[in-house]
Image (cartoon, rainbow, N blue to C red; front, side):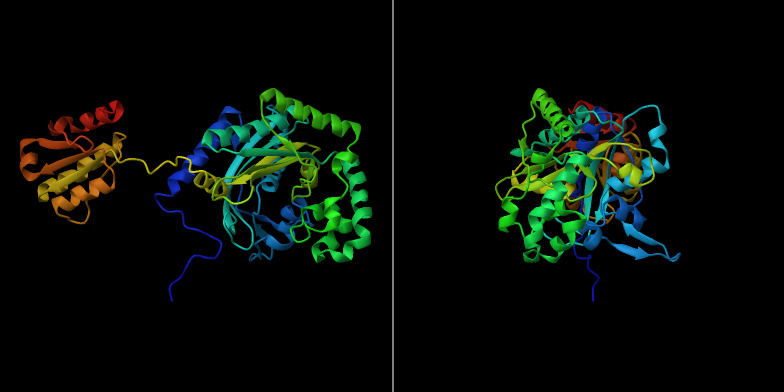
Length: 426
């Protein structure tokens, strides 16, 4: 019996991986321009970090985490999301004490959730995220939103919609929480087991339930916007004003609820739709959080961030038929004829690569015709042909594959010749 890849995971092969690299490099470049810096955290952490940081009432903690006990009898969990680990590092390494504040970070890497695999939802997925820690200024909310919207624009995505809501401050959330309990409690027995358990712990999460979304009580549930105090309303208005100044379109949706317990004030999702992409689908989600740093043992520190999966972005790009970069073109392919020439190409290949030229050669003792076919498949810009006769004369033939033009070049100047052609594109 052959061993197969675990369900909910994927191999990203040459020819596909270039698109992933393209998206990741675009995201890193935008972050650089916004003065965000990369942080890398472990793939697994102590389970308690996610229980405290993500929240005991979330689906992630209750149903989706990959948790195991190590040989030291410690409970560890493969990271299901990036924010808690970033905040843990922020606290443990005392980054809050560094002079340059707020702290602006980005991360990318694999995350793990035990879910039913489907299109755009994997058990191992690659997430890109941003966290800005240490500022309560609504302008930082607008900056984070501008960053991710700029990224999608530069990737060429169309029909991208920013959806906003405010979850208010602690006082506003408490008032809304009680209103939700009063609203759902008389009929809570009609809801799923998850909603029933959430009623007292975190009734806001009931609004995010997929099973009971059509229940009549969902449609007229109390809106958080009706329970915002003056400070929360002012904060939300300032965020919207900044977005208006930046020319970033948005839609306010009072039913928008993020799936994690630590969100306060600004919450948002970014949706995309396209032919073949199905219904409006969430590309990205995030929001402002208060209390998370304290929960993990640090000083009172506000933060805001977002995360998206690379898989979802790729789905959107393909659905909207955006131009997708192909594998990079090989600069030069070496074709040899004869034992002495074959031996010499090993040296020439090393010299080309050392000079910054992408190059390759045959390692399977193919005939000359088959070597030329290999050069074609690799889309080599130049093919350099070296036989024993040419080698004895100190010459090598260089063919430009696009034009078919062929030129005899001195072996001593061959490397410089290819370098000049590569740089000049001639």
